[in-house]
Image 1 (cartoon, rainbow, N blue to C red):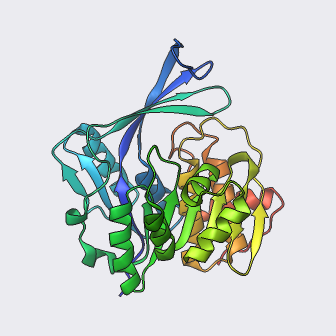
Image 2 (tube, helix red, strand yellow):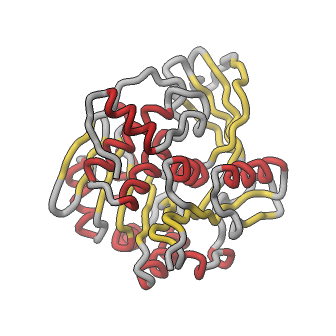
Length: 310
């Protein structure tokens, strides 16, 4: 019996946000003002956004045995996320120093002493049986492929967040990840890195050929492109005054997947996820501006986009 909509496997962090007049360059000195410390991490942000949107969520999240780790787990629990299978390493939880300029754009320094992900032996695979979707980042190929093979056998759908990395995953492993993914969320750099194609449509076609069922390319202020074997559509970004773009992609992915679980059509999923991300970036902190399904619908209706709640 499925008791959870989504299980996320991955990271938690602490984000230290600093306001600057301009983002620093190489060998540059820029004065800044600390805005605060906010729990973060790609998968943790994703789970909080999904839970806020109404999805039932669990996490296999890796944290350190320190105050940041305790704060991260407590924050997840405050959103109603099941943390019973989270992993505590005997090390420090990683943190980021994020510089924000007046436009809300950012540069990030990631400070870590260990892997940010659970290792394969720490995954309770039977726990995954409870989920409709399992969501991961595509960076750690061995972990993604192991989990992907398991959930495919159990008729559970895999969702993968894809960004450009400092190293290259072998082609055969990238192809297998695509074959295991029901839905992939690459940004523009991520889809180019993963497929070797610079053109979005060509790159998406390659991912679909490799086996991914839905490819959702997030493009920041240029909106989102959604591809399946049978359809393509574009949803524009909604112009807002951005204060902090940290976690915007995580929020988008979470709300898109939550809508998919609820039974919305793909184009409705994209519009609601776009609305959620637009609301989120108007506040400082990756989670401060997260919205519920009702709030996203209200925001869209105010923008003249009519979607009926399911």
